[in-house]
Length: 299
Image 1 (cartoon, rainbow, N blue to C red):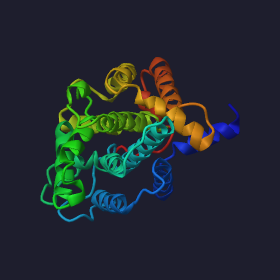
Image 2: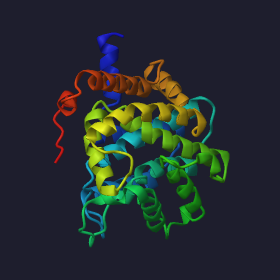
Image 3: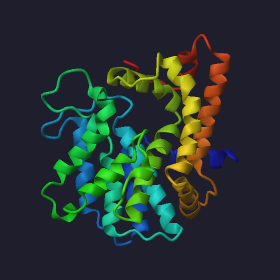
Image 4: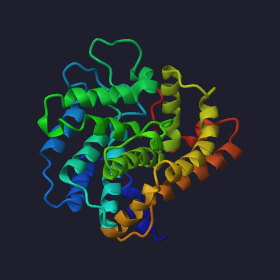
């Protein structure tokens, strides 16, 4: 790989520029459906942005450092790319389905946000029930929206696919396309976060959320890091068994949009996991220090 190609691939996974990511999502959505009307997406994006900033009526600002607005942007971008890749492959989404997919990605982690009168701990305490709370937020948000009047179950099913323990095969979807959107969102959620160059460092933040949320199975930050290798193996199996290999659509997207014939998300994840294996092997006494490739506040 040339330095130029490597730089481009890194840029395509960089989510530090929210405005740039939003512009790319919109360009991608227009490639999915050239006549797509962004009115509902724009309204949802602006409100979710305000929600995470603490400017949405009735809610406090986001105080979970792993599941923050950057994470939402990662997932939104990955979701748009998967949908576009599917379109390139011959799938034809309706305007309603594009809205369901993009808005579902925007709102999939709203359940971490605390209400204005909730001052106990942080939103991480809702880790085990955050999907249920996210679904409730969507339902309340669109309670008086005729456009989505018949789609509350669709939102419910699509968002449920982001649950690590959700058995997607047990969900009775309204249609094959709704099932596809659910599988895409579950895939985008995993691809987006695990492909982040700072994914390994951010696992320290995730452990803090797990600890407050009472997530079982992890004794320490180091324990979470060690188990991330096996988690990735299970994730690859889940892509195939639960999500129907919809991650394959990334290749079609990057070929069409950037003339890159690979899934750069999977490449980045492999790089992260290989580096983690190296760190675990050679830095057993000071794992955290070995992972500080960038300044991340752990407080």
